[in-house]
Length: 106
Image (cartoon, rainbow, N blue to C red; front, side, top):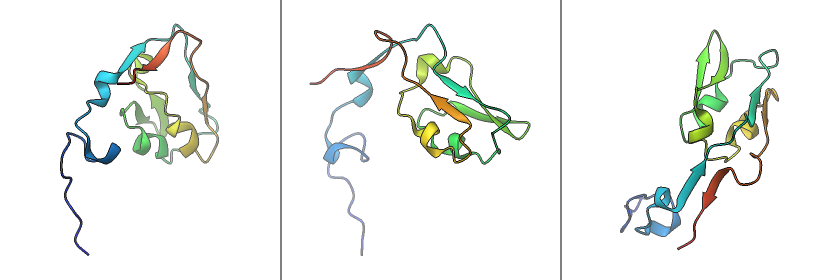
């Protein structure tokens, strides 16, 4: 079976190939406090969080995962890191009201 190329759109991954710029539809108001925490004692160093983060906010250091500085300004709050962590080392809570990612609908 031959895979069909996208017919249109800047991003072939989403929404049927529309020409919508998904980043233009988001606004980030940085949270004043952390909302993702890593328990270094539980982290097994599997790298799932590093591999799955669409914003590339995770790094491995000394065999353990850690968040990049400034992650609050770039995190899309998808929760993928929390879901992917089989060891339960990642704790994710949504930022307080009025901060975080806001989506505008066209």
